[in-house]
Image (cartoon, rainbow, N blue to C red; front, top):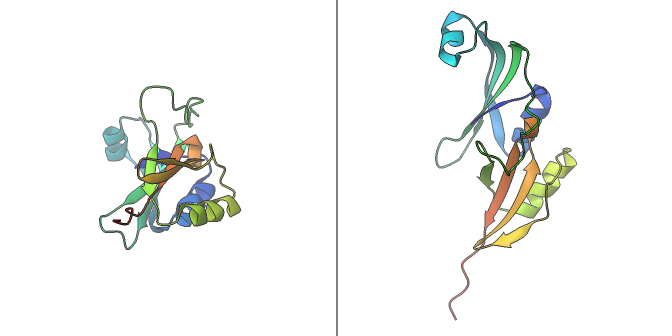
Length: 143
């Protein structure tokens, strides 16, 4: 997942609270990257954060544009539109993670709810992107 942000430090801190660690931090530019991205004169900070210890490789990439000037999308975070809606991360203890994120300045979009076999909550993520946390509940004991 790649997110374009205006505040790279704030975005990095958010994902570090979720357990991601920075693995790369470079400025990317040049003709080859501009051609690949389809953006003339493209230049951006490119930070990669990986979730260490996960069963499968999970990675978030953050971009902060130097050029062209970034166009902030006023509809980012609006869940009632087409296109990207939100991303969900599984956590072991949703209440502890919410406490940690709120202490770091992250705001909730709603209250925690139980839906099917999990507890869910939406957060206001970096760049206005909606992030969901999900905690799967234990199977009921056989009676």
